[in-house]
Length: 360
Length: 128
Image (tube, rainbow over all chains, first blue to last red; front, side, top):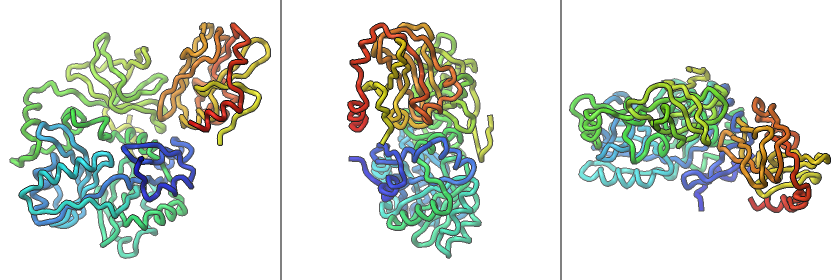
C-alpha cells in the first residue's frame, strides 16, 4: 500500500491523476502536464513535496559532523540561513543521496532528503554520527510545498505568517528563514525562482488551497520532471546512484577537495581522478522527431559508448532532451538507438532552460 | 469517465476501429488510452503499403510520460496514414476519435465481428 501525503484527498478533489512514485501515491498531473510546465516557466505553480523528508540535525558537534558526512564543504556556509547542495557518499565514493542542507544556527542545520531514500539516509547518518555530539531528527510532523515560477514569491508572500513575511521577501537565492513553526527557503528544483515552504502538517491543506486561490497552479510530478530536466538538474536513482560517483554524474562541481578536509568517499574519488578515464556526463538534444528516454543506448558509429540516464520531451524547447553518461574517449558525433533506429543527437552543456529562457 | 462511442469497435489494447463501409477501417487510440498516456508529443506512423497482421506492433504514440505501442486490430494492408499527426500529435488528446492514425484494407472483413463493442470495452477500461 503506497503512503499518502496529507494532500492526497485534495489532489483527488482537484482532478489529479495519481500514480505510485517511490512508495508514495502522488499526482502525476491534473489534466495537462505540458500546461503545468508552462505555468511554472511563465507564472507560478506548486508541487506537493510532503513525501520528501526534512531532517533536523542539532547539537554542538553538528558542523564538524557535516564536514565529514558531505562531499560538498559545509565550511562554505558562513552566514546563518544559507543553503548548500551536496551528495552524501559511501566510502567507495558512490552516491547514497543528494540533498540540500540549510545552516540555520551554529547548533541547528536542516537537511531535505529524497523520499525513497529517507530510511537508508537516516540509518547511514546515525551510524556515522557515533562519537559526534548531535541529534538526528526526521521531522515527520512537517509537510512541504514548493511554489515555483517568476510570480511564485509575489503570490506566496501574503500567505506567509506575518512575522516571517518581510524576512522571506528579502531572502537571497539559496537562503532560508524560519520562525518556530514555518520555514521558507528560496530554493527549488525547476530552474525558476520561488520558495520551498516547510510547515506543520496540519496547516498544509490550508496553504495549498490558499495558494490555489491566489492563482498558483497545482502541478504534478510529471511537470516537476520535465522542469528539472530542462534546468539540467540530476534526479537521484537515474542520473546518479549507488553505482556511480559524483565525478561521473555531472556533479564534480558539488565535491570540494579544497584544503585538508577529509570526508566520506574522498580517498576513493581521489583515486578515480588519478586513474583518469572518468566517463563524461553530458546534455543531449535530439534534433529530429522522437523522444529520448532513460536507458536508451548511445553509439559512435558501431561502437556503443554509453546510455541516457534521463530523457524526455522539453515543452519549452519543443524537442526532446536528455542527460547521458558516455565513455571518456567518445567523440561528439553520436547517435541514439530508438527502437532499432539510430538517430543523431547533439551534445550540449546543461542547463537547457533557466528562468524561462532557452539556453541552447 | 472516458468517452466510448457506440458506433466503433475496440481492442483490449485500447485501439478503436471504425468500419468505413468500403472494405477499409480507420484505427486510432481510445479516449481512455490518451487519458492514461497524458500529453502526446510524438507519433511514429506505419508505412503506407505495409502488410499488417492482427496483434502486430505497427505504430508508436509517445507522451511526455512514456512510449506506447499501437497494435493492428486486424489483418490487412495500410492504405493511408495520418501524416498530420507528425506535427500535431496533440490532436489525439483533443479529439481521439477524429484523430485516426492509419487506415487498413481488410484481408478478412469478418474479423470485425471478433472485436469488442463499446459495452465490452467499457468493462475493460473500468478495470484498468
